[in-house]
Image (cartoon, rainbow, N blue to C red; front, top):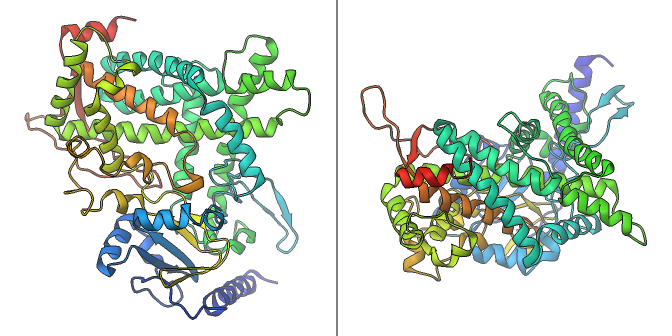
Length: 526
């Protein structure tokens, strides 16, 4: 069969699949309200600008309904825009909504193995992220991975104390880096969050910004963020497309997948091999990997498999660093734009610390305004505004609407945390709202870390990492707007880089010690 004929055949098959999906078995009940779409492609164009979370929030208000739907090439997407809808489905009906959908671009095409497809006589590249339990289908394998993670990362007082010791020490390093190279604040934040994760997970000490493991996770996380954008790759709508050869028209995703697979495999194997090598030599530092390997040595029965240890370590490595960097960058942006908030937080810190020491975790209950800043940062620009989609295992009905089996079901954290009926003037950064109303909806429990049984397992460590950094930076630094060559202030826009994770676009600012006393605190351990 020549190439032209093959193209016709494949697209004919895809059209048949779309027709079957669109006009197959239907319920007598309607889908939730949806914006108008186009024949065949449906609402595909509505996903093109990477702002579907904002659009969905507007559609929800226009329809006066907290549940909306989209049709993309015959595939149904359900978007939940309120805490009530999220709780009703992800919590109360968790058995039906705790699964993940098939996402071939990120799962099938980004990790597993090469497969010879005789139909096309080509090599099918399968390079997905099926090792991360954040994307695993709901079942025994997911439960086993999550159990191991919780046993080692969400631990009791003694374990939390050791984690906080690591975080506190590396946070002191962050202050020194911020003083030495303030214009490189983003690199400094990456160093900080990456070092904490690498130390806690693999026992690795980061020396400088060129650390290969930090660079590796940055590149791999960027590929994941791009691959997970809703509708970014047609293969997620038509999973059968993963079987077409790389040279086929429209198969550019296969080439991307091949490149990203290398990053994924390196991220799983390289830091693990380093940690295991140290363990085998008898000079491993206390960390997740060494604890698991030691547990296997003393286990009376079958211990943890190497695959399980590698996978769980890589989850902490990949997920923890990038999301925390995003939140801390948002914090720097907010302090640049809202100097009055910064001054209020510094007044609280000065009243407690007297400018004589740096904050510690034991100070947290006496620093409610700093905690309010953390909450407001998470609310103002949620790290994952649409989170990761859930999957309806079985067909369901909700509020008189039909939810077909296999539908992608999203919780829209952005809509929840920018609802003006809950948060007055939601586009404004105002931590005082949490002080004035202590019972106000807490972003930490409502979308920032996902929903239901699939909520982020590492939230405790992530929150500590972010809180101590914010408190410490505010204690010793002033953050202000940069100026141009004419001395005019540069007001950075609230603009986000494309991708699943909400990273503020790069912006200039001035970061300098507040006083000589502050400088002494910054440099006291140098």
